[in-house]
Length: 79
Image 1 (spheres, rainbow, N blue to C red):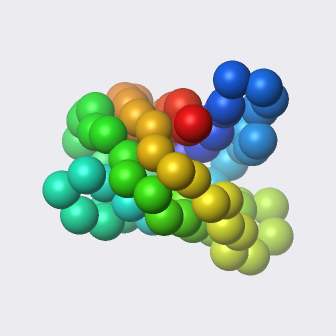
Image 2: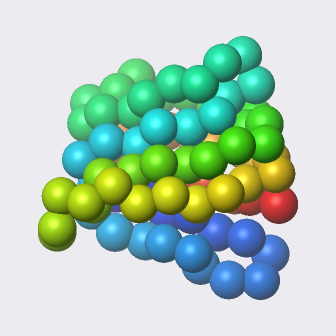
């Protein structure tokens, strides 16, 4: 599964991941490979993801944003 995290200034992360945990507007949720398509707004919190390359969990603090999940691509635009 590919995760792309972008802001207005930069690409914060782009790469293969095993799982992504997101602070959704209706509650936190986890996206795994094969997840159904969805679009959600994000609330302040942390995006946590497990990188496929090293198996380590990484974190990105966010104040909000949107996420689109489709065909094993998780696209996150934060602000």
